[in-house]
Length: 241
Image (tube, rainbow, N blue to C red; front, side, top):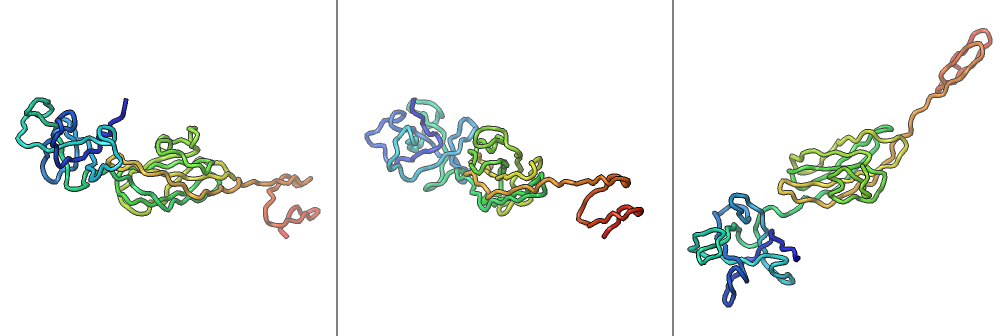
């Protein structure tokens, strides 16, 4: 069965020789200033109003519509019926533009953490991120699910509300492994559920785990070896050189 993209409509200038409900859907325009949408009895579905259908196929890539005045019965296919629709001038419509993320950053924060950041051009919706051991970017759906590109659970993942455009900095990733290379991947879903392309940072390596060396000195005991040079003096013990 062919999929009809119900979010894209094309307003016909003429329906000469065409049959309504077969070749096009009669619609009635809503009030000025409202987002372009089909009004499903109170539930508005955002729609994109196309200005050209070159290379597109009707009923598969878009729904052809024609504004008819004087109709009184929404959702009726009789002579008085029409399909409620609301659209703007030209190519206007609801928000169908996905956010754009740029300048992804990631850096180690000690041996088990990382600090992440990214820049967005839309100040709404939710930012999702994952930290994985692969430079291969997961899909947007995988990032939202906290997964790697293979579908496995990411080493670290999170999300946060986006309240403004510009740089989003200081995102803390925790629970990482010392001395390991990681990569941060981001995507954003805006308030209209448009999903950005995933962007990935250059990667970072966490610091090596710190180790402490102890020395066993006969007659003295166990001491911690550090950067201070020590000398064993018979009868006096260990003293700093």
